[in-house]
Image (cartoon, rainbow, N blue to C red; front, side, top):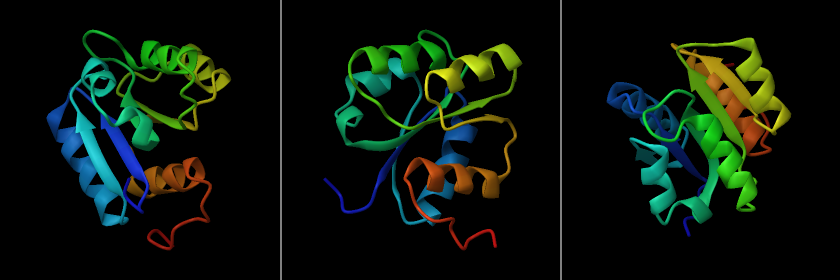
Length: 129
């Protein structure tokens, strides 16, 4: 396993995956990207992931179902949800299940950095100060 935390990014939008991956790598973290929750679950990265960034609405298994599945399997990963369709009832549901954050697309890079720092239990990065 790498000495740097691994951030896994799941989004069916390739542009969002690429931009988020670029941000994560610029912070010095490892990053793995996946086009679907199913692709992530089939990968070897589930057990290596330090923080998960996932879209809420995706074809197949959505982010909420992924969170429930991971918890049921004993994987208590810090999860940052991103969505183009922010709904209060969904935000409350994922937070009640332990989500770190629920961000609306397009999200601010500094806000994402703060969420990653929180997920990893780190002091706030100097990137946005």
